[in-house]
Image 1 (cartoon, rainbow, N blue to C red):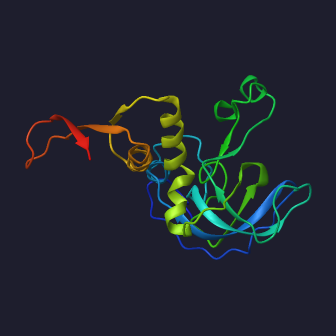
Image 2 (image 1 turned 180 degrees about the horizontal axis):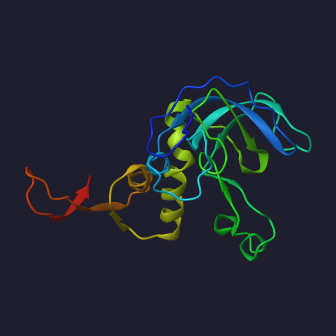
Length: 208
């Protein structure tokens, strides 16, 4: 499914299976979740997207073939492919091992083709080997929403009471992990004004 122009519907296009280049793998895609960021790309609200581009960046699939210089993955491995798909490797952030802040990144489904397809190519260094007792559909959201939530949870340290602002996919997943760890979860939400609900209200709910 290809986005030719932002704001237009995706188009079903037949293409040859992509060939992996050096340090890349070709993945037969089993599942790709839909992230809110994908909708920003499709609506043209996220600048710098390649055109045309295949959206989708919460990918789970099977490595079908590997390019040269790939030593970490092999054919048949199940992998996850997340949002961050490439970094320059030499900016101050990469040198500090904080690649997520790279000055010249490429993102899956934005600067390079993503997972709304039968096959895709990804850099092996940005693929996560998956050995989880989950089916691909349930595993796919972990590639973005799960990673965001996990990072936030770990940065919260050992706090027993956690406040989640907004309750999208990341909060939905982190709440499950936090509850498993015995923490108390509070979700802060704001209702948008509408004819049914009236003016905006700020709410605090204890997630049981």
